[in-house]
Length: 349
Image (cartoon, rainbow, N blue to C red; front, side, top):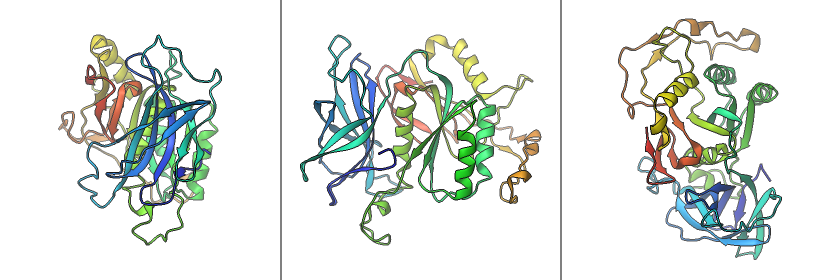
């Protein structure tokens, strides 16, 4: 049920499960982490079953504060529900030899097990892709010219896998996405991020879709970082309209991946103890025709030949839009930052 959300019961104390991930733990064991939506302050939890083995789930909010200070009425927020399958690398793993496509969560109110998609997020070295891009959920998205600009500029910066979270898009946007999904040089993972199914009126404040902030974008970002663990060595979280243009101060046509790799080689020992890299940036300007064209034949990228940069370079943490994550080392991320690591020994570079 990749296009559905598993819902347990039907009251204010609901838990809406999104995706289950098998992950490597820092102590050498194996864990299960599930992204979900739940009301602030709710203590309700449940258990999960993989194959014939059952595990008790513990819950924690994705963001440290619930609700967010700038969205105090959005009480339906992201949660992690986690289970420890093994404590270290020496324990026998009590999982089926062939991984099932689903895990099951228990709905105690109806005494039934409900399926959610299970993804193996344990990183197999070496990873297939060097750089991936997490795109925040597209909601009521109809500006189709943004799609090729997003993909082409990130492809030009070295990205080869894209995790595209889709809530609701127009037919034109869908067709553009299909065009890139068909390309062999890149991989596009479309993740359905739908509205929560409910019989409550769209205008009712009790409708769960009216009680979350921007389709719960923070949960989608963290869902994506978990999803990237087994498929991308590095990943960034990006808005659709963000264009990354390296300064090329060395006089070469550097890509973002070139800069990352150069720093990784230079700071090899530091990279081993870090989980993310926040890059300082300046603001750039260019003319664009995103909203003035009416047909794909009118698309052009000529305006990227002339990009003006501000002389001020903002320090890391101020106006920073590019954070490069090492996904298997990140426990909790904000849209453009890391707020908690898998180990206290790890930190931001």
